[in-house]
Amino acid sequence: MKVILTEDVKSLGKKGEVVEVSDGYARNFLLSKKKGIEARAANLNNLKLKNANEERIAKEQLEEAKEFSKVLSEKTVTVKIKAGENGRTFGAVSSKEIADGSKEQFGFDIDKKKIVLKDPLKAVGIYHVNIKLHPQVTADLKVSVEAL
Image (cartoon, rainbow, N blue to C red; front, side, top):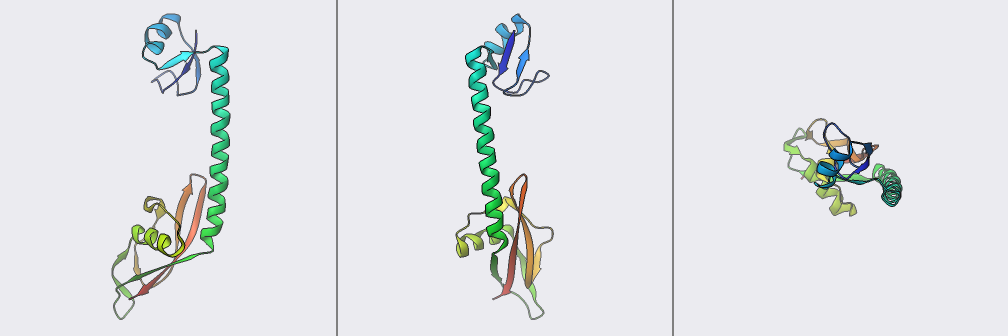
């Protein structure tokens, strides 16, 4: 019997796959526990439409991320922090401060978890920070650290 999996099943397949299983396994386990539905024409058509819709949404998200990446690469976020005479800061600039600065200065809502800091920003100056907007798109944002 062919079954469309509605959730991941260990050693059988992932959600959305069509698998061939024995009739008893399908009736007694997959269908009864709502882990799959019978692969009839209507269900296969619904799966096909759902996959096409998800693919279209993924393309739109990728395009939005590319556009936002271009906008971010032109901007410079200024973060002010206490610093000593030689330009060393008291503490470090965190990803939360960068995200707050971008929201305050430009209105961009960037998740602090997506900001990748290779090294802590512990001195006054201009830094390039990577932001993971999408699994395939990484933006480069300039961060200017200034003394108060």
